[in-house]
Length: 280
Ligand code: HEC
Ligand code: HEC
Ligand code: HEC
Image 1 (cartoon, rainbow, N blue to C red):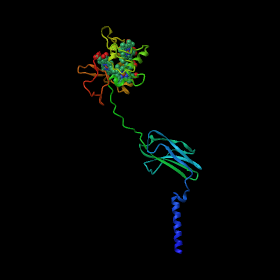
Image 2: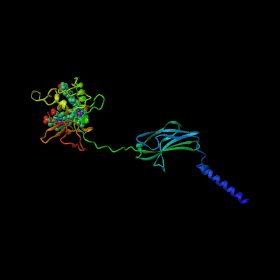
Image 3: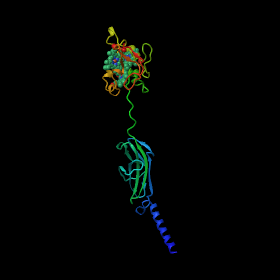
């Protein structure tokens, strides 16, 4: 009888201890506060770049502050606070911003902790991946031939050769022709090489030696300064003489009349180069 009572006492004592353990921090901390800690964005396993707005809810009875933290990996052993401790509750709103460019690319856990005035707290966490480096840049292939650069890329035809002609002529108060003498349409929205242009802007001879065959200016005298004195043609477009020319065996500066399929060194893949024009 005595032993059984003592056994029951031990049993209650053990149950009591288990109950305290089950309460998490046991006697040192009461139950978690009533409230909500949740992160709705970024989503679980999201890939993050740049500055990320963290969305969610951080509320509690007797709310004191919340904080956002990140730690390395899926189960961080240490945490870094993002920004400052926030003393205003947020319900379905912006919890704060995380500038992910300040950390190396990798796997992180983003954590929200909502703390009440007794030091009890609620947490929510999402695993994320920071990937700011992006894919390695594609090798820059040199662009050769007028239509490697001059094709319509906007509804108005910008930057086709027809658009360049119209745009430059407009600047000197002229409506540029939209068809060549042989009947090729050179409207801004057309994709054409320099052949129809040379019907009027080919190099003249005799009395017209300094002019185009029909137009006042030769194409050479238009495009050489326009490109060689441009800021963007040599830098942004890596342009040079061989963007427009290929020198043949006789040392002639042939004109690349259409986009040339080249390797990363600018060497044509198809020979003889299709669409090459003899200079006028
Ligand atoms: C590698 C790219 C590239 C190639 C190839 C190229 N261009 Fe250009 N072109 C440009 C750029 C860039 C500009 C604008 C330059 C600027 O505004 O600084 C331009 C401008 C022009 C203009 C406008 C000139 C003006 O006065 O407004 C004409 C016309 C033109 N190009 C014709 C040609 C012709 C004809 C060819 C082929 C023989 C050619 N381009 C080849 C990049 C190129
Ligand atoms: C039917 C003849 C004709 C054709 C074809 C033609 N042009 Fe013109 N272009 C002219 C005339 C005329 C002018 C006015 C100024 C002049 O006589 O040079 C002019 C002016 C220009 C100008 C302005 C020159 C300046 O003084 O600033 C540019 C640039 C131009 N053309 C480029 C082109 C291009 C590029 C092509 C081919 C898409 C082309 N043109 C086709 C006749 C033509
Ligand atoms: C944007 C294109 C472009 C660039 C860049 C360019 N050219 Fe030209 N070049 C032309 C065009 C168009 C003509 C006129 C072709 C015609 O009249 O048949 C020409 C004509 C010439 C001619 C006259 C051909 C002949 O035998 O009469 C020579 C030489 C020449 N270019 C050399 C050069 C050199 C050198 C460079 C570099 C410093 C250069 N070009 C850059 C487009 C270009």
